[in-house]
Image (cartoon, rainbow, N blue to C red; front, top):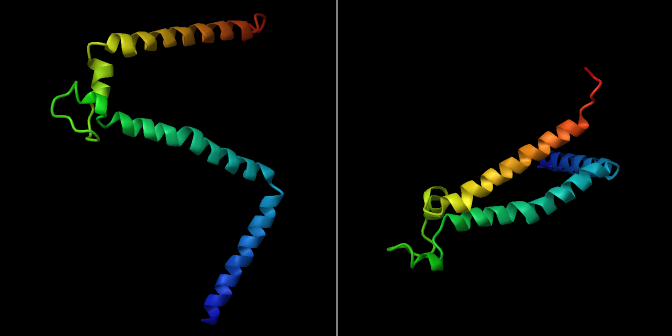
Length: 118
């Protein structure tokens, strides 16, 4: 029993020392704060979007026979990637984004390259 108390006291002292060292390393504290903010503002909504896209919603019931609200489905993904509207919903915007990305990259590489380095 005494040995357990000594061990817990050592752990507590070790924790206090760790916290006192952390006080002088503000970048750890800032990193933790930003990770928590990132989790709440980006990760949580992203998980919610993914979970919602994998289940039937109330407005899907009129388009899919036998569907139940909340049941698991790949319906939304098949509609976007291989459905009738796939060209307008995914492929055309994706290609436009790719062209803009390649164009901006080319412009920036050209503007940032030193002409006389050869």
